[in-house]
Each structure stands twice: as C-alpha cells, then as structure tokens.
Length: 135
Image: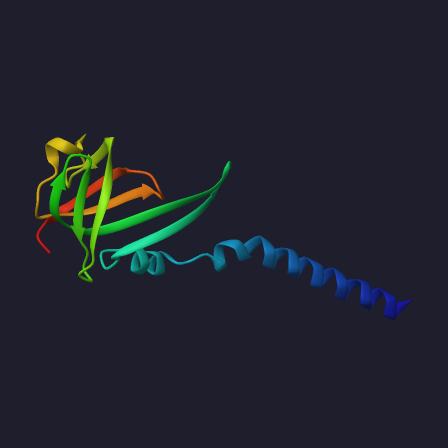
C-alpha cells in the first residue's frame, strides 16, 4: 500500500506542476516588448504581417520611407534601403501627424515627409502616419 500511495503522490505533484507550467507558459513564451520594438520600431523599412482574424487571415503591408512624389490617389516612397515604392492611397485614408491630429491625405501630405503607410494587401492604404521631414 505504501508504494501505491507514493506513486499517487508523485503523479499528483507532476500533474499540478504541469498545470502550473501551462497556466504561466503563454505569457512567458510571448515575444518581449524589446523584440517587437526592434522588429517594428524606427529601424523597420517594410513588413508583411499576416494576422488570424475571426473571418480568416488578413495580410497587411507596412512601408516606411520619404515621400518623393504625390499623384492623385498614390504616393511614391523612397525606403531606407533605396527601393522606390508606389503606394495607392484610399480617398478615405486617415493621416495622423506628430500631434495626433487626423486629416484627409490630400491636404496634409507633402514631398519630403517621412511616413509609415499601412494597408491590406491588394488594397489602397487606409492609414498614413507622418513621422517628420527628411531622411
């Protein structure tokens, strides 16, 4: 009877430890804020992010660069690695400046602005964040 009781206690301790591990593990295995900031911080040039949503996956494209040309419905960016990218802009695109103000894209954007542009793949950009002027 003593051996069975020891085995039962050992099994109970292992199961409790396993439960505690899985209770704590999701937060511990997540990317730290430093890694996220390093990947998506000021040094990021461009990114493609795929997000699992309620209705399937969403594919986002993010570009950062200096505006080199503005045409009706699009802008041309020069990214930090020298690549020139033409980005279609939605007529309802929200432009957020350093002060947090949001205005229409046509009235705010200027050649020489440093911007971060976010859009769904194969769709015009709907969010433009102005980061300042120059490279």
